Length: 180
Ligand code: 5GP
Ligand code: MG
Ligand code: MG
Image (cartoon, rainbow, N blue to C red):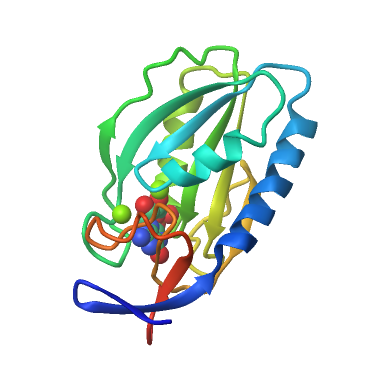
């Protein structure tokens, strides 16, 4: 069923059941990969709030959770080159295994920016996990991006945490803009 948010129309792309399945699978991968240390999961607000909440419930190794807030789209439907750094990560990550949790990687600018910033704080390792990836929009490969839920076309999506003009974050499924 099509839905309207502000001036745009959206249609279903990935349903809740599929999201749950992939989240469980990624959780298992993380459980396998982080048995030797206590990883720090760093959620990137706002978009990843539902994904990290669901993903963390699949983690059964000891772990910690922290947040940072970055913005790139702020209101529109295309990526901005300038990233707004709204809330810094407060936790000391020196010597820690860090796993960044993102909602979506588009141009990759936001993730590159965050990885560079956190690397300067001397963690033991950094990897990234994103629910969604738009491979054809990615400007430079990101070797740290080891976990991806779904690869999608270069289309604008909302739901399950992702917004259009701050709306649609509450939707259980992911929708794409009609006629992108
Ligand atoms: P990038 O820096 O990789 O171009 O963009 C990353 C950020 O832009 C994401 O974390 C997300 O907040 C926002 N973004 C990118 N693509 C989309 C999209 O299709 N829908 C929404 N709602 N946000 C997006
Ligand atoms: Mg994001
Ligand atoms: Mg947004």
